[in-house]
Image (tube, rainbow, N blue to C red; front, side, top):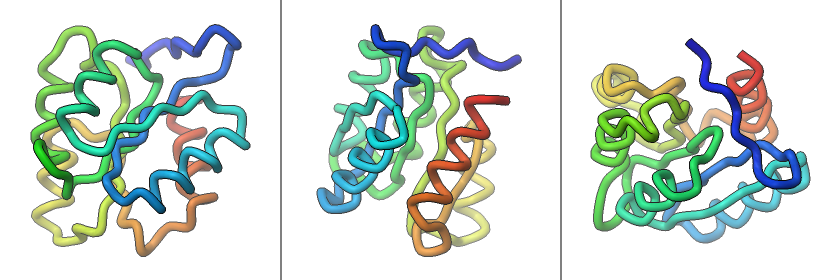
Length: 133
């Protein structure tokens, strides 16, 4: 069952970007902002989990290789928590091994995108499609 989008006070869908590469994170924050999203940012999995629980985003864009808590661990914790389990999580990573993809999807990711294969505009289109679904 699709999660009802929560949106922020201005009616914008909320995206949480969990990415430790400050250049990439800034680019996604800017691009999602220009596309009419409300965006928050976390630079590690522990901070991402805290923000997911407090801010209740409509979707989480999550890197896997992160300091403090990796993306797989954060994804497990998001899906195990009743307050966040219905939030779609899109893994956006450079880990492209079949085993990593299978693990991410098995843990509950809505999609698994390899950074090198997707332009930011394509990532935003995928996010829009997931939020409409």
